[in-house]
Image (tube, rainbow, N blue to C red):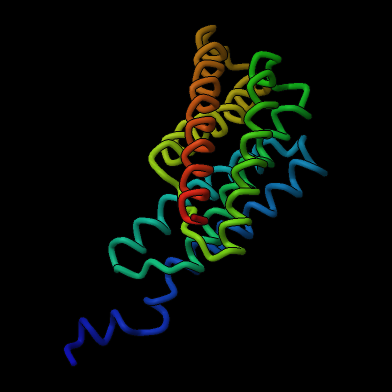
Length: 198
């Protein structure tokens, strides 16, 4: 056995992506705690959001690069994403510093995420493939941009920086497009779920 194949078969390497996902899942729970109990810690919230998003990119990249994709990792990844998004949409709704225009799409986005989470749980329970499709991945990318920008804007405003007028309408548009992608993702998930039940 070569040194490279020996290295790739080591326990640490085989579980590296899952470890990164676990750290991201833990940080999503920390973020939830911050949003529920310490919304005034806006810099901590921004850093936690950034950390979760880094783990979301990194675990997938590591899993593909090392060819160590697992069902457990995929399940933890989806759970982390849902906790993260539901937490941040709750932040949008609860925090008075968030512009009213950004609160409007947060309501239906929460409903879409709850529906997607329900479909995912049902699929996992029945051992079906309910992996995120292209609509879900596009939605996650856009939502992540909007979620990261929101605490960044609050930090800028609290430090006396002037935020350009186009930022809020742009974020509103991003969240509206995300909502459309979320609806397409939900329709795709339901179709995939029903097809596999037949």
